[in-house]
Amino acid sequence: MRAALSKKEGERRKFSAVYCRLGSKTNYHGYAAETVLLRNVIDLESRQLLADHIWLNYSKSFQEAGLVAGKKVEFEARIKQYVKGYVNTRYKIDMRTQDYKLSHPTKVRMI
Image 1: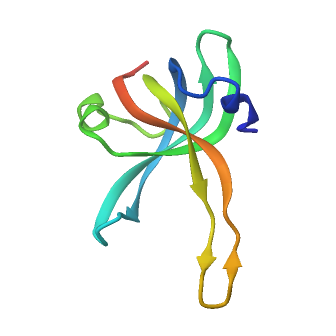
Image 2: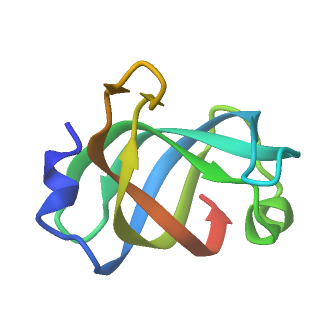
């Protein structure tokens, strides 16, 4: 489903999505970092569904928006490519793939 994001890589666009819940991940330094789960991510310009879900960092702009589960959120973000998957050099396992994400969300507001 994120193939639609690949066509718009590098662009900063306006999106809407439904806020579901908070989560957490281990960041690069080994510390816990809070994340936000958004479902049904829609590009507001083309009205096209770009992703069924996406995880973003729980940044200051999300904290100030007063998120409520099940409510719509509008925000701007940049579309970027990233590498995901599993690597184990000891056993020569490399299961990495490229995918697309939204990064640097700004102007977050509840609808």
